[in-house]
Amino acid sequence: MMSVVLEINDLKKIARRRVPKMFFDYAASGAYTEGTYHSNEAAFKDIKLRQRVLVDMTGRSLKSRMTGQDVAMPVALAPTGLAGMQHADGEMLAAQAAEEFGVPFTLSTMSICSIEDVASVTRKPFWFQLYVMKDRDFIVNLIERAKAAKCSALVLTLDLQILGQRHKDLRNGLSAPPKINLNTLWQLMTCPVWCMNMLRTRRHTFRNIAGHAKNVTDLSSLSSWTAEQFDPKLNWDDVEWIKKQWGGKLILKGILDTEDAKMAAKTGADAIIVSNHGGRQLDGAPASITMLPEIVEAVGDKIEVHFDGGIRSGQDVLKALALGAKGTYIGRPFLYGLGAMGKKGVTKALDIIAGELDTTMALCGKRQVSELTHDVLHDYRPAAMRGKKGKEKHG
Ligand SMILES: Cc1cc2nc3c(=O)[nH]c(=O)nc-3n(C[C@H](O)[C@H](O)[C@H](O)COP(=O)(O)O)c2cc1C
Image 1 (cartoon, protein in one colour):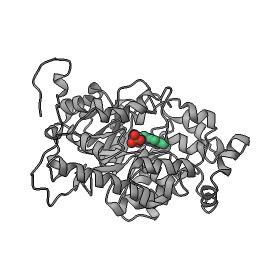
Image 2 (cartoon, rainbow, N blue to C red; image 1 turned 30 degrees about the vertical axis):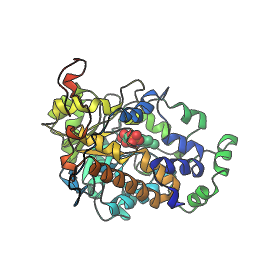
Image 3 (tube, protein in one colour; image 1 turned 180 degrees about the vertical axis):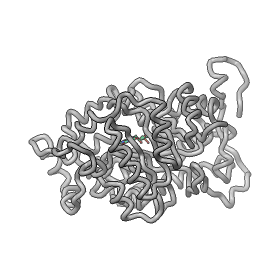
C-alpha cells in the first residue's frame, strides 16, 4: 500500500475509503460554496518557478527556524479540530509523527485528545491553539494547562468567533462521538477498521473541554455548546490580555488583510499566520497565497509572517517561502495521512512534502530554504506593482 502513495492526493483517496463520511467530509470541505476552499489550492498553480541549471546542488538542507525554534523544515502541522476522529487517538499519533520528523505539532482547542494526553506521549514541546470563549476562567485554566504541558508556543485563532457554515457537516449529522441513526450507522458500518480502532480507545469527545468547563453535562451536545461559547466580542484588547496570561511565544492566526496585519504587528506577538482557515470561514475571501505578498510587504520587517491554506505539496511550500513566509502549516495533508494510515500516514505526508520541497529547491538552483526568495519565481511582480501594467518585472 505504502509503495503506491506518491503524493498527498494518494493519501486523500485512501482516507476517503477508511474514514466515516462525516469525518472525511469535515476535513475535505469549506464554507458555503467552497469557492475559497478550492481557490486556495488552485491559486498555487498560477505561480511559476524559474528553472536554473548547472548550479552545484550538493549539501542541500531544509532546516530552518519558526519563532526562534529549530525545525527540520518550515512546515508545521496546523491545529485541526476532531483529528482524533480521523483516526483513533489521532492527535497523539500526529504529535508523535511530527516530533520524530522535527516539525511543530499544533494541538487544537477542539481536539479529541487533550493537552495532557498529547503531553503523555511526546517528549519535545508541542504548540497549543487557543479559541477564546466567553468563560474566561476556563480560558485562564486552558492557558495554565498548556503551560504545565510545556507547550512552546500559543497559536491564537482570530478568524472563528462565529462558525462558517459547512453544508456537508449538517447533511452528514457530524458530531463527536457520532450519534447513531440510520444515516450515521451506514457511514460507520462501511469503515470497520476505523470502528475497531475507536472501540480500543476511550478518547471519543472534546477532552480539552469535557470535565474542565463548567455546566457541561451532556457530552453529545458539546459541539453546539462550544459554538455557543465562542466569544463574539473578542477584540485587540483581549489579545493583549491573552499575551499577558500566556507570557510565552504568541502566534496570531487568521490574518488575511494588511490593515489587520499592521494591528497584529503592534501587539508585540511573535508571528502572524496569513490564513483564511482553509476556506472554512469566510467563503468569498481571496485565496490565502494571493494575500501573502502584500502582507509581507506591509509587516514583514516588523513581525515573522507564516502562511497556511491550500498547500498540497512541497512545491507549494517553496512558493509560499519564496513569497516571504518564514514558516508554513499544513492542515488537510496531514489529516488525510492520519485517516489513511494513522501515524505512518502523517509521517508519509511529511516525507512527501519534504521530498518535493528538496527536489524543487535543487531544480531552482537553491540549497537552503533561506535562499528562497522572489528570485526563484518566474515573472514575479511584487504586490505594489499589481494592476500597474507594463511596470518593472522581477525575475
Ligand atoms: C478539519 C479541519 C479542522 C480545523 N480546525 C481548526 C481548529 O480547531 N483551530 C484552528 O485554528 N484552525 C482549524 N483549522 C484550520 C487549519 O488550522 C488551517 O488553517 C487550514 O487547514 C489550512 O489549510 P489547508 O487545510 O489547506 O492546509 C481546521 C482545518 C481543518 C481542515
